[in-house]
Image (cartoon, rainbow, N blue to C red):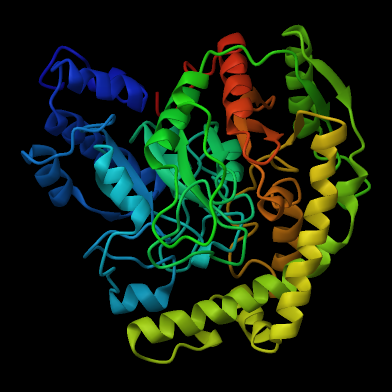
Length: 487
């Protein structure tokens, strides 16, 4: 039990907005909230392996400090994905054995971490991810596999798999994630939580980066409610000094879009992965068809769309050389930081292969690939100009994979590259276009696995997605759906 009359099992399933309200009304103290989260992590994580770096002592000290910021989420416990969102003095391994073995620690907070702190969040630990965030499962050799709370034999997805599993299991109400090719939305789908990838440059990558992995990296959180997703975006959106560009400002706080009438929207749906000829897995098709019927019942104009612009092969033709160049660069930047030369052999087999390929990618090839993506993105954006307000697709082309099937040594590097490329087919297009996209937990397969659906709006229109997602959450609530072994 907590210090109040609220049972810990009930507290665990309150969203961050509700937990912050308890602190604001002095029903619970920040310390009591954090103690409850730590207790749940200690009990549950041996089964999940979601939290690779506990920060419990720091969390309790922060929760009890007089200077805890009086932001909208004062005292609410949070977990950070161990990638990009660094916190001063804390381990930052990025799923790499080389960094784990050297116990590398971040010298400063990232700008996003500082904004989370200012909002009042208390960091309880760092979550697991695949090495350098390059896989669609979370099974790094550095830390071992994270398990899906809905079925411990299944993957939680990747790369923000540890964060998604922790939120789904009720360890914390919100956890940080980042999304370079679907890494917020895919684990949100696999674990039955909400995952929004904001518009490109909606949040900052400073102070270390203006862009990361070229234009495809987006930062936000995984939550259990649309209102949390919106309110956290209010607390973190906007440029930092020196950012190369920024998304257009919101017309009003995103929290005010929750419950607002979205109007009658033109919603097109598609179930065939871009570049493929066969539809997604039948469960993923069923999830989209279910969502389409629900949207139709809510008064929207819902029709199938072929969206042929998504099938332009330029997207995937440029994908491997560009991502390979990124892996080579990752090795170089980490070599500089740790003060010794890291080689491709320091990485897992797929990443080792990509890093070796990446060292042969020329600057001209990088620029040509980037230009090809920009041309491709212009073609795709026209769909929103002419045909739809929102595109509905599966988030993943198949249900959560069985653990081990996509592990770092389960297949050849070439086979894993092909598997990852297929797994990101519905999500990576909108990293390239920079459009906001959200995965919602609207469906369960016959065997109880979460199957998310993705909604995509025009660039800069998170407001449209939040209104629509809130309408769907009200029409088909998911807050009472909890993993059977963790309720």
